[in-house]
Length: 155
Image 1 (cartoon, rainbow, N blue to C red):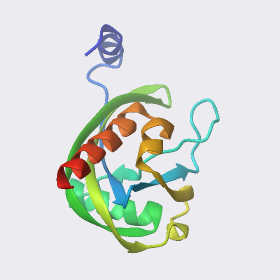
Image 2 (cartoon, one colour):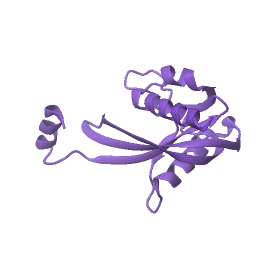
Image 3 (cartoon, rainbow, N blue to C red):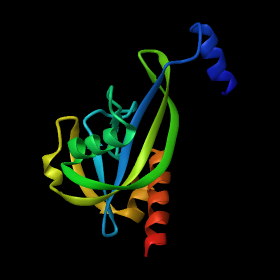
Image 4 (tube, rainbow, N blue to C red):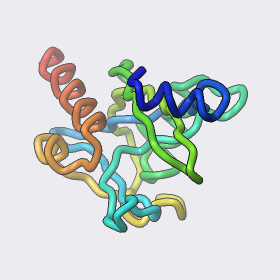
């Protein structure tokens, strides 16, 4: 833990709160489905992201990832393996929150990206290589890279 985070944790009386989420890298041919959430970045810009969300009580991370993929993208996908975890810190209401997101590789089965929920402004397919440079968050770009490596092994 960095000294800044340690000092923040000490000031708040303990360790910062942690959140756990799960998400998916859904592939179809050489494309991945991405979302533009309705929530903007801190600077007001649009975010290009992978589908992800909180793990609900009684749900496994894989079940949460499948649900979030379906809700946020409108597509149904089959799990093909765990890719890894993205860990980062963010600020909400003046508090530092630690977040861990477990990502899974999925293969597209069916569905239409226009059938996403109200938390998403847009869901669309883009080339995997484009996602490696266009996704807003470095950790998500890394997950796309891991997915591409897995797909290469399968060829």
